[in-house]
Length: 223
Image: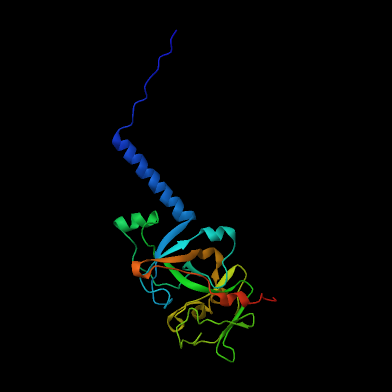
């Protein structure tokens, strides 16, 4: 008996389009969750490198390989009370944000100055921030004439936490302003979403961000 060969029906064009759309959305969700995500800079706290409303691309791959390091510029979730309540996205912007195609709010961007176990203090005899007693040369990211901190502090960063400071030191409500809260103003490592890889918009401000070399000379905490 001969076997009948049936010709498989070709999907309709709209089915192919629907499949491609669903596949694209699935890939976008995976990319947002594990690879990269877009955010906007909510304030002037990271001037001069990051300006308010800059669109930044945050990569998450490096978090797979190790912990956040001193000098990294990172985006992190509000650990509680750092940001005032803001309007929520609605409609198309909200839908796009779910798949990583629209900048997400409710986050902060700062520079990591100290990691768990570090003693971070300000200021030494020359007005510099120190980490484990080693002074930071911050001219690579602070504007000329900007004081490293107008507020004195001396804290030990809890384990699995980070001490965050904005580059615009006189206009950044960072870890220094939350020292009366749990963790002495530090931020849990698991609140970090990723590291800022580049400014992607406006186009004339496109730039890659690289960690400054000053942190390479910081010694480990003896604690």
